[in-house]
Length: 86
Image (cartoon, rainbow, N blue to C red):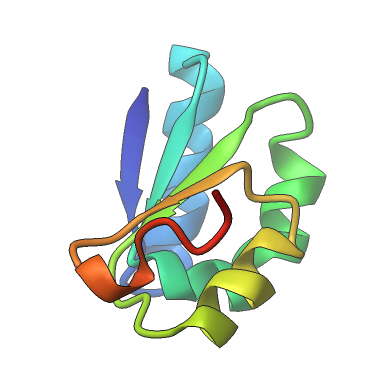
């Protein structure tokens, strides 16, 4: 698994470049909520790499929105959000 931290467009592009070089089995996008803005770019550039998200995921709506963007899993420290889909 490779993690990329998204601060801005430059970090997004550099992260994708590093992922293409490293060819990980899985990518963790942090903060996870940022995937809602970056998924079109990620889909175009990381077609075969499964994505999970971590960080700043605060409620069920965030989880639903993220999972509806082809993310395969979410991690959160908010115990109230655990087991929503089990």
